[in-house]
Structure formats: C-alpha cells, structure tokens
Amino acid sequence: MHENNQQETSTAFNAAEIGALAHLYRGELYRSTIWRTRLDATTNWAVVSTGLALSLTFSSASASPLPLLLVGLLVAVFLHTEARRYRFFDFWRVRAHILETQFFGPILQGRGVQVGNGWNTILHEDYQRPRLHITYPDALGRRLRRNYGWIFAIQAAAYLGKLLIHPEPIGSLDAFWLRATVGPVPGQLVLLAGLVFHAGWIVLAIVTLRSGRGRGQSRTLPETDRVLELARKAA
Image (cartoon, rainbow, N blue to C red):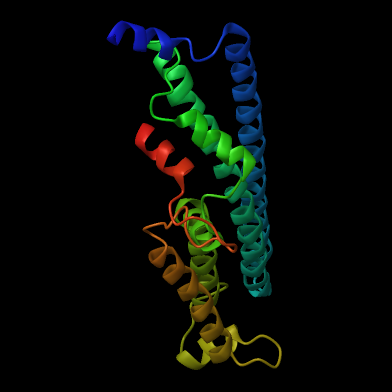
C-alpha cells in the first residue's frame, strides 16, 4: 500500500507537465531578477545623488550646505520608489522559492515530484488571486535597514560636519545657528526639521523590525498568507 501511494505521488505530473513547470520556474526567476535589478538601480541613484551633493557642498569654502538638505528629500523619493519595487520583487521571489523547494527539491533528493503538502494547490490559488506578501511600511523599513539608513546617516553626518568644521571650526553657538540658516528660515528651525526627518526614519525602521508580512493589505483578504507560510516552512 505504501509503495502504491509513493508511486502515485511521484507520478503526480507527467513529463510534459514537469517540463511546463520548469519553464514556469524560469519565468518566475526571470521576473524576480528583473525586479532585483530595478532595486539596485534606485539604490545606485541614491548613492550617486548623495555623492554629488557631498562634492558640491565641500567644493569650496563658500559652498552652501543646501545641497545636502535637498538630497535628503531626493533620497526619500528614491526610498519610496524602491519600497514599491521591493514589494513586487518579494512577490516574484516567493513564487520562485516555492518552486525551488517544493518542486525541484524532492526531485534532487530522488523522490520525484511530491504534492502531499498541497503546495501545487496553494500556488494555483495564488495565480488565481495574486496578492503581495509585504506591506508598504514593512518594505520601507526593510530597505531602510539594508541600505537607506546608511545613506541617510552619511548625509546627516556630512551636513553636521559642514556646519561644524567647514571651512573652519565654529567659534560659538550663534555661528552654528547662522551657518544652518537657509534664506529666511532660521537655523534652529532647519535643524529641528532635519531632526524630525531623520527621527521619523529611525522610528519606522524600529517599528517594522518584526515585519508583518502577509498582513495589512488594502483589500479584504484571509488573515493567513498561505503562499508565504509555505515559503517560510521550506526556508
């Protein structure tokens, strides 16, 4: 009886269907690779923009620190774009991971195709009703902790360095406020806005440290993300 069940499980798909699944995996892997490349592109834009702002700010003694303030806003836009892209990258990556572990894994172990845990049904349901597996705030938090937190830290440190020591060290607190002044906006207000700006990113990175992937979608969905749970079990 056990041998019959094993034989039935191992022949869940015929050769043509296995070939079709292999092509499906290649397609999912290609799409995840494309979105991975898009993530790298926005990160590169943020790094290059920050480097350009640093060059402009420290290019001469009379150079303004304003480029470092503006680049912080620009990097925030890149972070927003990258968080949206990361949600789609994660979507395709999870599908490819399921095929790797649930389809190819048993084959590599010599057990043939196994469908006892229902991975094929779960994947079919995901194709019927696709959903993203990570919320936008969680995606923001992940990209902050991985890349953008360091970029913001460099931007903030360079800005403070410009105020404190370039072109020469400040001699008083009044001189510090004066250097931070931007047009009619007093230096105290500029620094307060910068503090709130960076503190907000720090709070977001901490709050989303335990990512609620699979929850918090904008439309009515099951509380349990079966596709994500399957991928986690296989990890």
